[in-house]
Length: 416
Length: 220
Image (tube, rainbow over all chains, first blue to last red; front, side, top):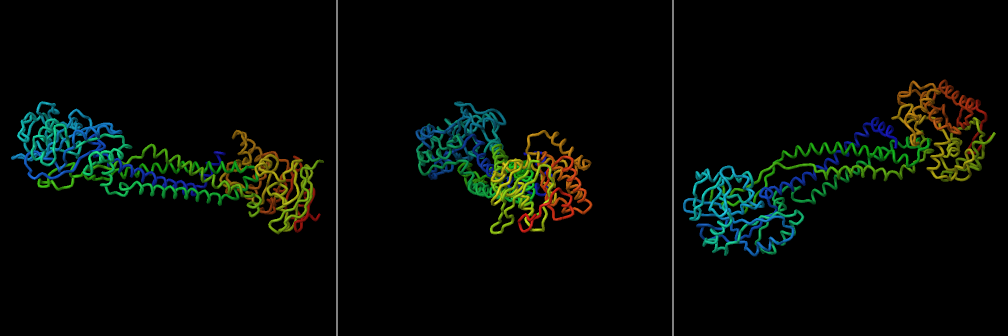
């Protein structure tokens, strides 16, 4: 392959070169952008759970209590028994685990959403430790509580105040801004899970709906290997029965409603179409190149170039064009990704995961996690596209090499 | 004088059309032979057969003792690169390459430093008195200049024989005469063997020998 000849062909046949490069670039940009968009929706769907340090949340649906007095199960998310929790903890593929207890507490003077959490656990609502904006995180066994900032403002609660929940008194150790962390299982008051479990165990309304013992819970947070999420979901449903409600990135993805989010098959189909169109463009360009240069190939053969020499020269040109197309395609993809990054997506949070009773102001309103679509071009996608470019360029040349070998100099030069 | 080219019983047919019929001829080393005949007499086909650009239906061709009949295409290409130079009626220069690069074209597949390749091309362009146009592309050159470059290209690999197909056909008479003088000079001063196809009897008269063709046969 002669580089000098190759570069001059590309430079002096600019229209042909630019057509090939731009066509390939657009095809690759579509391919890369569609996949980046699909990955961005997948990533966006992970964020609501990721914010609370989990990949899966588990609840179990139950009945509505007859009387809304004292502590009741929030959103009828009823007991997950301790032995069931133990079974789930032992499932393969779990990297981290937390349990919590979400209750509504109907006191005479106020309504409180209360979440009992494992304060030391990095999985689940324990992550709120980093969102304390005033005072400090509660200490276990000292009847302390964290108040959510908007709730504290409404009821003029300060750090160090005593508050009464279901007849029990707790010292407010700090104020937390949960809205900065998560929309999932956001509560007004956060207690140590042991304190919350005692409240639930002593509540007639809780026991009337679903028997509850000291070490039971009603919401689980699981950190898992992404590849294990589907089998884990299946196993958890087997343990908890039909009424188990398991939230995963896939379930959030479905709720997004985008074509790209709804179906990997859509992205795959679009990618395949873009790929086929790209290959056809390269083949057409190469075939046009050959047709235009039949006489030139005849001359090369006449002056002593072998078929191998000619194929390697044209393959070199094709690969360089494909690489230029790849670079331009990548630039176009980065621009497209940057522009698509301005798209805001609203991820609906299921009511049972952000529970405010319907009779309270805003209780029936849908809750969304709003974020900008995290569109990025991954290294794997960029690497795949460069390999694809080179393979397409080389394959196109290989396909046309048979045609090159059939060109007879005596025929093409005679017609001149 | 030894033969540079020997052809025996050459036939070429395209489907049922016989274009070259039972041609046998020899060209001696250093001989300037002109193949003349009317249009369609088969002279260009015969040139293609003799130079290995085309395989005969039957018969044999050998150049400097090497048979080129039934050789593999790549072997023939290599043989042409080493032993044969071509000059065409329509120059057949590569439009994207400069004059010197066109001259060096047969050397591109050869492992050789670019400087040496350029040096050889410039030497030949100098001999053709066109070295001042070395960096120009064919589109910026006149017909005569293009043909000088084509002749330089034919000489770049030190060929044993040059095949020229109507080398003055696309040129005016004055320029054509100048190109003919170059070929005669190469023949006379370097002892190059040349087989030229022409339909111009006047040009043919200046060759050592004339071979007449009619309806695919050598008639004299």
